[in-house]
Amino acid sequence: MCGICGVAGGDAARGRELVQRMCDSMVHRGPDDEGIVQVADVTLGMRRLSIIDLTGGHQPMHNEDSTIWVVQTGEIFNHLELRSQLAAAGHVFATESDTEVLVHGYEEWGEQLVERLNGQFAFCLVHPRAGQLFLARDRMGIKPLHYAISDDRLVFASELKALLRDPALRGGIDPIALDEYLAYEFVPSPRSIVRGISKLRAGPYAELVPRRTEATGPALLGAAAERRRGWSRSKPRSALRRAAGGASRVGPQGADQRRSAGRVSVWRHRFERGDGDDDAARR
Image (tube, rainbow, N blue to C red; front, side, top):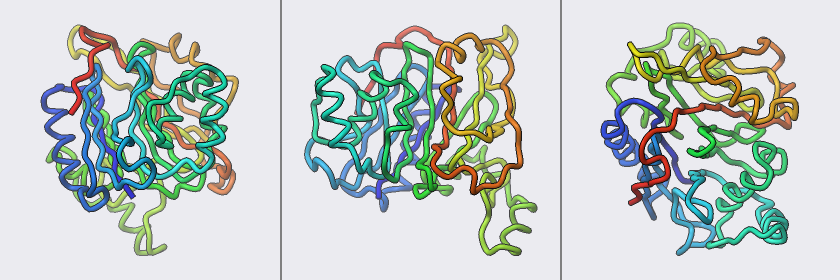
């Protein structure tokens, strides 16, 4: 089953402490292994249930030169096919894990990697040199992923209760979500039952761009409004780089959820580089 979590932005030491607490709350999802890594201003955590590559599949996982990091829950069903394609292109694999195709696939295909994935998954990929982080969820939304944006931080986890290990995120019951629960017997995405915490939907994605000001430092701009489109070749990474310093851009809303079938839900965050971006403190 596994469980992933992480914090982007904010105080690095507090972020690492929070990730440890979130991992501790998800031991039942991953009783076999735990891993935490801090890369630039992002801390990633993982609780693993070992299924593929029992001894070599430790996460967080990185590429050949440790410039791209990932945590994943779920399984990439076509990982052997993708591994063959990537190996033929010259990529060197260090494990037999399906998760490793994500870091090499991102190197080879960039964000178009997700169009090639067949599976049930939720993952966070961090590329400090490119100043990028994004969260992705499978097309059908099988694997859960919750997130909250609080001040200058993004906090995410596989389970809602992991996010509640941060007292700042205990916003109480969302009355609209409660009304939806009583009407439908579940809370539709993107809401959760807790005010201020959202579920990443299958299909659309949310994009935010950080901006640094002398008064406040780095900050995530705009709400996590989800775009009603999937991966688009008209949105290359260069466009994200040009967007630095501007406000988040929000796409049209309200399309039927069924139209998202066959797409992958993604949250992107471009973070500012600082000293030690190429260093990762791993446990």
